[in-house]
Image (cartoon, rainbow, N blue to C red; front, side):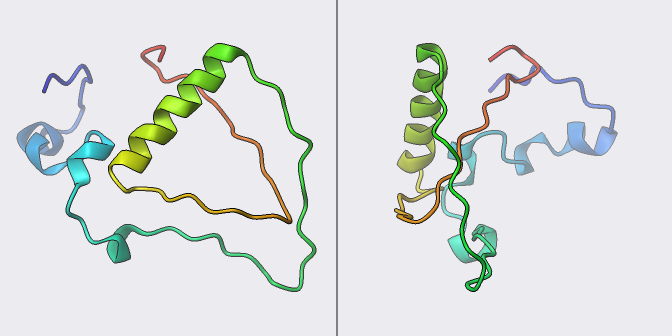
Length: 96
């Protein structure tokens, strides 16, 4: 695997193999160790954002990322009928 990142710390350079550089690199890690959950206060009324429209290339990028994360079981599909939050899409430093 090629790493196109310049590391300032010798520790990172010496230990490249112990870090996860993609979702596929952390297969086999117990989800109880890395699981994230929404901290929601049950008594607070949920807010629902108005659905935003995205450019087709953004929609496709989001679909690809979701498919990648689903395929390695890092995320799972859930349905919240009461509230919705839009996706926030940011370009990486490498332009992807």
